[in-house]
Image (tube, rainbow, N blue to C red; front, side, top):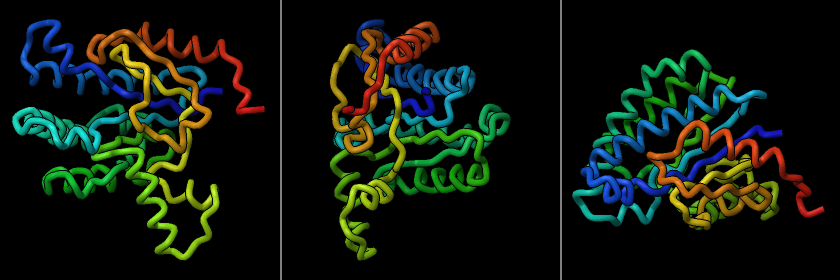
Length: 224
């Protein structure tokens, strides 16, 4: 059963170089692809219940100032659009954010709060957007939360204290890179992995369908 899917959308900058376009154009295409991927996920049969996407890592925050400015400007625009996105309302999608959101500009933190509040009562589908996210940081923050609550350190308690406590059944990474780069290290212990040679803006619905088909061909044993 495929209930939860996650995306590592790699390859936007290489796409800009490959097609000799500006980084702003490539990032814009990448953001639009996120919307398409959400649409594909919502229309799978049987229906996927949860999707996660890695939008910005803690390392990304150290990138060139102009590049980061371009990305954050587009992110701000797309978060505003989420407030009136027909797909969100039609499918009753709850939008959650994961990561050290406090590292982001105040204007983006405000929009994150607005989107979270606007979709908090939806329960048919969940999308987790990872911003200012690092897998090690997530585990450190979870342990600190355990300590602050005075809870014993158990797998169950630690899982509950993660940004996202659920585990993706399938993780898709584009860009012809075969590693997770610290994405959901705790949750991905038994996730199936699918690596696509396509750069993220090139990733198509047929590529998505092939990833789903490949997942369904595999036998999951969970270490047993």
